[in-house]
Length: 277
Image (cartoon, rainbow, N blue to C red; front, side, top):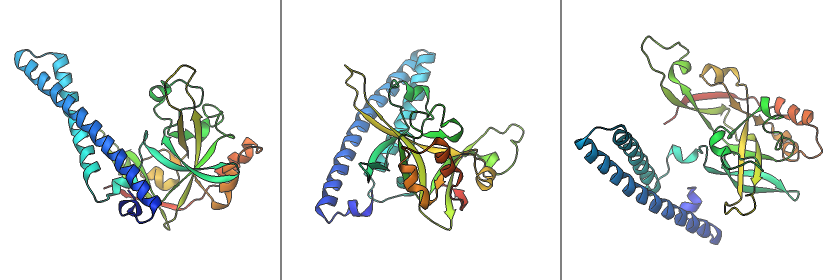
């Protein structure tokens, strides 16, 4: 939570503070209910294993243990008053503020990071779990409904990537070594706010469905610059030049080739990296 919302002063900040507190309380309640259910599941599995070892009981024990650990970690994060580095991150499936042009004016909308294209069934979220990443080489294919139509912008100062440790260290796996995932934090040098090209969709449910509307987005990614590739990652978000932001956010009437040219003319700071906390 930003400092102005942690210690609100204006009426608007107090209203936002109250909404955040209400949301956090609902999350805590849901997690505590899930924790109770998983602890019961674990206890039932352990009792069953004392009588007879079965695959189901072993799976219930494994899954319940993992979910208990996850729920406790999330409860700890929700209840601690201080901010940490992880609070500045967003993950696929989380909601984040993105900038769009609406009625000729810039507007910030909260959208889910993980785009569900309009007209597609909800199962797309499971069938295509990587839709937080709009690959440039597929903008005119999978993303043809959004590219040239519904563009957005995400403003960030840092991005994170999952990489294999051996790849980050520039070496092959050693004999008997299993791949290990690590998270790297990338920051532009010199430090700057990055204007990240995004696509979005306003998904509406089919008639008769009680599903809510969904606003969701994906960040456009391209082949990585040399320093990101050397760190072990094969994609990189596209950072727009400030002078190209308005054109990106107003794609209507522009050719796809012209929009592609904006992505070609991307900003190219040097991305320094370190191991994420």
